[in-house]
Image (cartoon, rainbow, N blue to C red):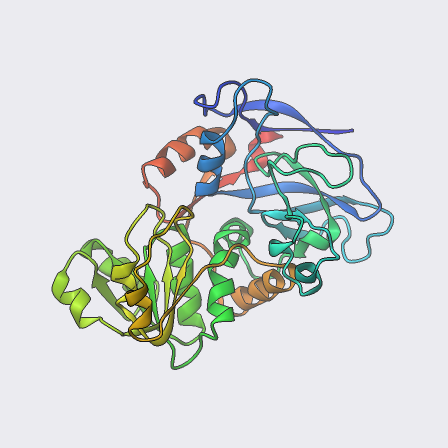
Length: 349
């Protein structure tokens, strides 16, 4: 086994403090890469995973599923990468490769469920995957992406989860010049949705509970702000948007946001993954559609990275040494970040 070090949760589920610990990685299989993790984003999913851990007897948890790094070794069958190459890895590290979804390049919807970067089950040996809050990661080469030149590796790390999550619906729904896009919620997902929609040429607005987000919305390239707590502004924005990207992470009534969607338009519900109650009339009047999306397949992720490099799109980040991971998680829990924490893993050397 290969040995490295990372930030690991152990013990009772309520004990969410991560501690530095030695970790084991598998020896390289023929199509594997060993990657030195340089920068890893901190995602709300990491908080959810920490809070959802089982009790005694559960395997340790090492979060982190959006990272950039450098190849340090390759298996004998690898031809796309060599030692020294900059790479990016997201929240999926394997899939069955044979189902209809995998054949369509949508490994994120694998019928046998994709192998997740952490908390997943390795398809070969049954071990639990340990994430990118570590100095080294071993990944199948098919699920690593060349990091395009010109993308800052720290600010690019969140593209591998937050970025691809909003890219998939924007791309699938045909957003481009002439599209009217609304983005509800201006957090880790939302700010990237704004940047991408603007880069795609869409007339883009932010929907936020607070008028204080107006300056940030403009700085990100948005053309307007709709204050969701202002009934007059919400009424004036009725039927305005062809696509509304809903990134709000807390439970909320989607009916009010469907009211902002134009006839034959779509609300893509991305932020809150719990149950949603929908009044059919909110869909019926205007032939509106409610959709969702999750992560992305290998082709879409590669296309997203190329697009971001071409248009200079990266996340707005606060970079912290990895030793401050617990501070980052605590502040993320309180929504005290604009807009994504990224850990510098070099202090694990």
